[in-house]
Length: 448
Image (cartoon, rainbow, N blue to C red; front, side, top):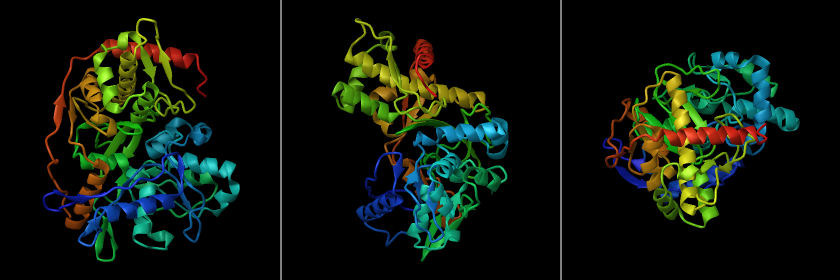
């Protein structure tokens, strides 16, 4: 968490705490981590307003007494892939896009509810309310016991699969179709709306990507985020309407929209490559930069955890084009970085095909600290890249939002230090070779 001065945006202090990785987690572990982070940041005694940004999509299911029914199913849990396909087939992709702006995939909350209804009917029958991680944490922080006090925002609601962000209303018919019965859903707050926690103002909160867009003050600039997952998004006045399902029609945290493409595999591909090569991230970066563009024909297809875009939840990764001549650690490191970035270049292409203008990107997320990623990115993405100073941009976005709720004016704080710009000549042969190898790999592996 970060605590910033409401007038200047200057970082006052910060704290952090770990919570479990994985695709299913007891929400109590998040609450424990939140309070550890608050203590690590020196407490909230002098804090006038708070807001929480959290991972999108996760299904936190509560019974009529407010107890958690089962561990939360998170965005990266692909067990609901078949449920997603069934829901799409029942109505058709066009009907889902018209209703919610997006075609459901395994990440969406609505698919988690269908999976619970089919595989855990006793748990499904107990569900009286459904919310998302930041909704639940905000509710717990306020120490409320009433399900009707749970709140959310448009950005997180738009990723459920049962919210129309154009009309700003739930589509309860889609919720019932998935779960089998209606439940209490969070009240959706506007961007500058707030609720109270004692004498403190509590902002609406936001999904992680929408909060990061606020934190980096992206405005109309495209953002590529390389965290556990990879995302590419850009603020828009119009909701996306992509029937192919590549671009999700999410809302942002300013009252507009946030067309977004998400991959399941980004920084953790580099983590896996470090383990495979027995190096740390700095050494991996040096290896990658010592190899030529295209890694002498070696390609890494980075679907290590299945994939969301393209929608292949059972896909696996591959190393293709391996020969006696190119079988070197440096080429493998380079191919891994290029594979992740080629996936994000495809994501930007999808945004552009749906009306986005992308003349440059802001590169954020844990993997953006890699010199190899920074220097290779503009050549693969084909546009200049700006890397803002390292920061917890989801938390920074929540701080901006809390200030907005407190003062009624959106804070135009500068970043802590200037962004670093990177430019390079495009290398179209890298993307062409990647696409060829990827398509060949997928044609010879079981992905469904």
